[in-house]
Image (tube, rainbow, N blue to C red):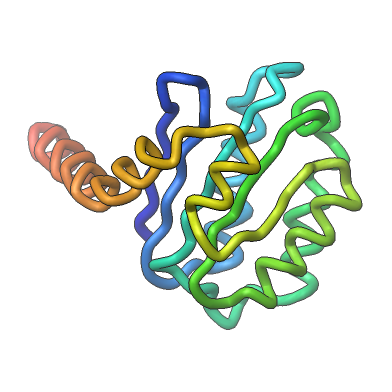
Length: 154
């Protein structure tokens, strides 16, 4: 499923997803995210899921397995704050919120970007602009990779 993750000028992690999201994709993404993170940075992140939904492979067991990763990365998740903005699948997002909090990650699910930004202390105008432009940037990044791959021998 398409998604984009970038860092804002104030260190805020900006992430957006579109379409259906599967459990395997979530697990790979979160492992990569945790391995790339720097300990004791206490990042703030906003995740826009308003244009996404979880497919049938994402259930209670998979969400619990995903959040179990945080037990291995306490030095990374301690002090972090993650705002998740949802449009649908609020039950699965709330379950993730519950399990993540139990494992030391401060997660709150919101239904608007503005309220999520207040909680994070982020500039809502900047975040809204980024979220609006994210699909175009994600498409451009995919196009760049495709062009680069055309020159390779596989």
